[in-house]
Image 1 (spheres, rainbow, N blue to C red):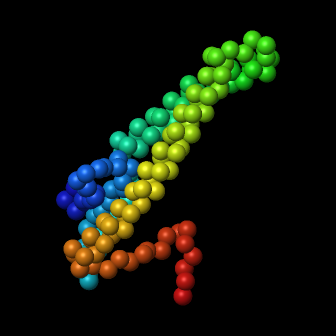
Image 2 (image 1 turned 90 degrees about the vertical axis):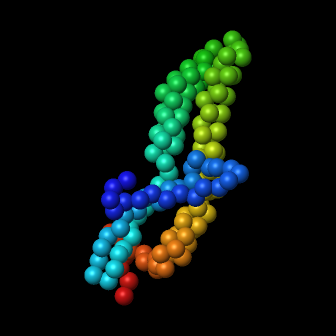
Image 3 (image 1 turned 180 degrees about the horizontal axis):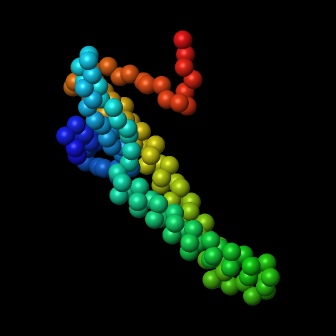
Length: 139
């Protein structure tokens, strides 16, 4: 990382979750001291593999699913095991991918809280939520 940039993650001894968020932060000098700004993201390689999985499911699964549906609707008497697999496999891959992603992201949610607490405790800091353009200002 750069001179003022850093990356933090929770490392557990007995198990790991590749979808645990990483904290990408940077130090910003201010008149009152130093401000840490950052974001939580999953590892770029994990994100890339997840995108690859869903692209694979779409590019190969959709034609397989549509072909099987056409055979099922047009030529009903000749439905065989391949047609049934053409329906089950793409849907199974999609359901597996979505379920894995949701489960692992939910499982890694506690890491955000642990990393925030670690930063606040270690650096004797206070967390400040900044307003973004999406959040209305309150007075």
